[in-house]
Length: 115
Image 1 (tube, rainbow, N blue to C red):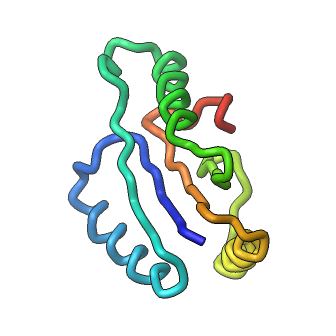
Image 2: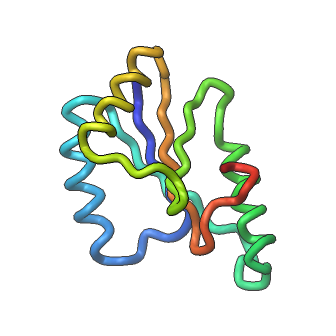
């Protein structure tokens, strides 16, 4: 199983890179890991919050493949501790999931169509 982390936005905060590298090094002992920054839509500053989330959602849907298992990281979702996360990962591996995608939404969160 391959794990991918998709983040909508820009990779410009100086503290982000060391955190990503540390986490990637830890989890890559168990699974191959890849990070992808999904660029914000063009003219994002001119779009309303709802329209921007919709455009971001359309982009994500275009990137997903039918067999991907998507986990949307949302503040209203379930919170896992380390044990629960390891059990979740093991269950996906047992189901022969080929690609597990964790999605980090943009500035306004994740579109309802994705959730």
